Amino acid sequence: MRGRASRNVVTGAAGKCSPQDSSMNATGVRMVTRSRSRGPGAGPRGGGEKAAPLWRGEAAAEGRKSPSPSRHRRKTQKLNVAYDREEEDTKPPRAPSWEPRDWRQQLLNIRAMRSGKDAPVDWLGVEHCYDSDAPPKVRRYQVLLSLMLSSQTKDQVTAGAMQRLRARGLTVDSILQTDDSTLGTLIYPVGFWRSKVKYIKQTSAILQQRYGGDIPDSVAELVALPGVGPKMAHLAMAVAWGTVSGIAVDTHVHRIANRLGWTKTATNSPEKTRAALEEWLPRELWGEINGLLVGFGQQTCLPVHPRCQGCLNRTLCPAARGL
Image 1: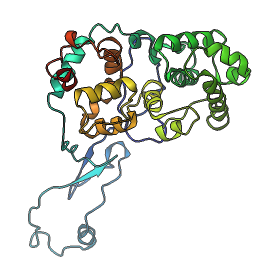
Image 2: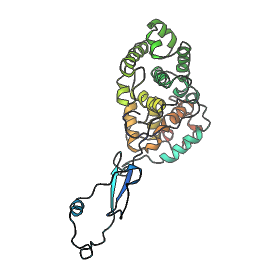
Image 3: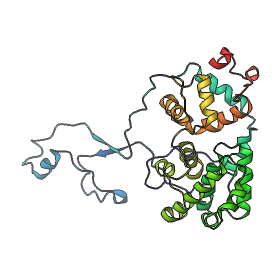
Image 4: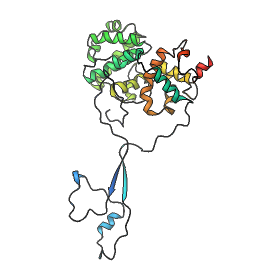
């Protein structure tokens, strides 16, 4: 990602978007040892490396010639070691002040129930809606467009709309050259299709004018686009750019997190749920949670009449115990 701090790169499966390779600056420290003397006849440092700067006091000592080195021998001193911070603070992550009871076992159970990878999201999700043979910039645009269409829409409907759009050559230019009536016909019956026609046209024009037809590589710039919300932005960062920027929370994740008691207090919006989850859930799990819980919500933890009897978490879930 351009001009960005270190990324957690999402491992791509076959057929998924192959975001442009990006250099990843690993967070950490580099030890630089400073020797008092390199010995007689020492040549330049290997690889053209510059000499480490001297500590305060050493420079003054270097400039003074001792009249008799044998009589004024310095005491043996410990080797100076400096830590050069390359990216960010290297302190270990702070332990959460609160975490849900039994969440690790609940997560293991959901993974077991989702091991078949046979939910609609697993074969019709955003990772499968773009043209894998298209240039990287076009692929990223198609990822963003599929996310914009997916709001309040079943995966099957989104996939159908994307297929019709791709059949006409889905690029920023082709969308801008398509009249609103034709675009509406192509994406119907996605939810709120009239509003999405307007948002898609506006966003495509911005991408052409400001980003050369590409999509932004930051959450802040993505959510500034018409019709793009936080969930879409985090998924776009993961799928299009290969960076985990946050937990993507939709209605499934929002519902299931509250049912499992994964929020310290009940939340009434996906964004509040996202903030609550990111307070305690280990960051290495952020990229997994959306797809895992969305599929779980499509198959087992349904919005109405959840299938609790067949759920491995039925004895661990507060909502199931309350039924």
